[in-house]
Image 1 (cartoon, helix red, strand yellow):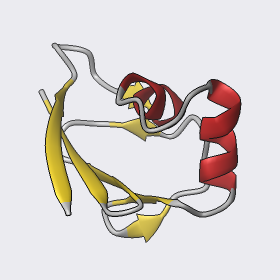
Image 2: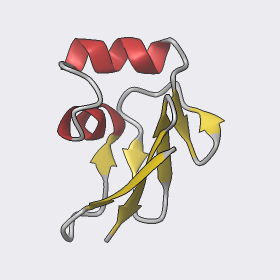
Image 3: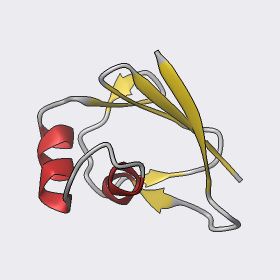
Length: 72
């Protein structure tokens, strides 16, 4: 399992679809929407279906065995 960290750089949150694109876990916004819609994305261990879900510091996003912990 691959685990990394992502810093919000002082921002209060990042939308889930944008985080997936920034991490290069998908190639486009459309692909991010499909991944989320297909139930391939978990937030804090639970399947997340909201495309623009606000991800805040302390939360963990998982896609196909890769984890990212969001930090301040």
